[in-house]
Amino acid sequence: MKSTKELELIASQVRRDIVRMVSLANSGHPGGSMSSADFLTALYFQVMDHNPETWTREGHGQDVFILSAGHLTPVYYSLLARTGYFPVADLGTFRRFGSPLQGHPSVRKGLKGVTQASGSLGQGLSAAAGIALGKKIDKEEKTVYVMCGDGESEEGQIWEAAMFAAHHGLDNLIAMTDWNGQQIDGTTIDVAGNGDLLKAKWEAFGWNTIVADGHDMTAILDAFAKAKALRGGGKPVMILFKTDMGHGVDFMAGTCKWHGKAPSADQCSAAMGQLSETLGDF
Image 1 (tube, one colour):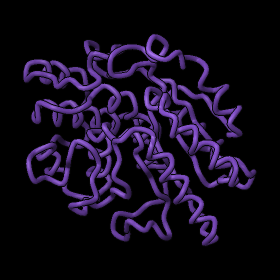
Image 2 (cartoon, one colour; image 1 turned 60 degrees about the vertical axis):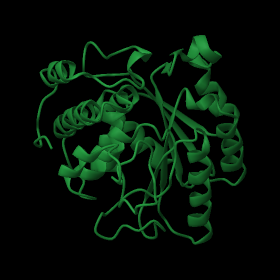
Image 3 (cartoon, one colour; image 1 turned 180 degrees about the vertical axis):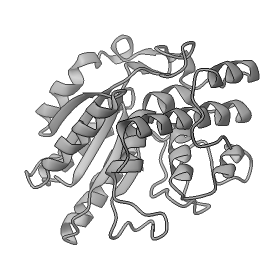
């Protein structure tokens, strides 16, 4: 078990990885990757039952994670590397031709740790619900985790999957939303009016819903503990993590401008000055 302070320091390293990967590739999505770094660090380093040594795409005997917001691969790849799925040095190949570290998760090159290709927004929750149902049928006492974006939650398929999961009583499914209020070209309120309606929507669709500060490690761990305690209650769980897009770097925080924009070399250097190096850079 890691302390909250240890998890916070790891999350800082993950943010360094994110900024450097996107800057080196001159392509990628840093904003949402940085806003979700804290709770995904807690998930991979403390909450989820997983083992890179025995991992398979079939997911038998382990918890499973699906990145529904598939453009957020910088945070995903950093966590996979930092928890031992592939060498940390490989992060330097992000988005290069022929690299398995593509802009969206791909299974074509057999990248260890990636269960489901994703990136067509809305589809990851459906895949996670299917896996959760499979584990139910197999009577396997493991949990399926999936992360969605709040902009992604404007997709109709999200709500079709929500109905499916509630109908089948998938209480082994824990979903998370990176609720940063931003999407590709504006705020979620300006684009589609989701805003503060997400909690009411998930509750109306029959899900247990938890709201937590996505940058407070104690609150994050408490939210996951509450979600896991609801297993057996006959309902899937949605944790809405309130976050700040671009969190951790002052000039990137709180704006949609860094949704899919690569920092320059100078901006990367400035960001590194604000983020602690704790595990060693790639």
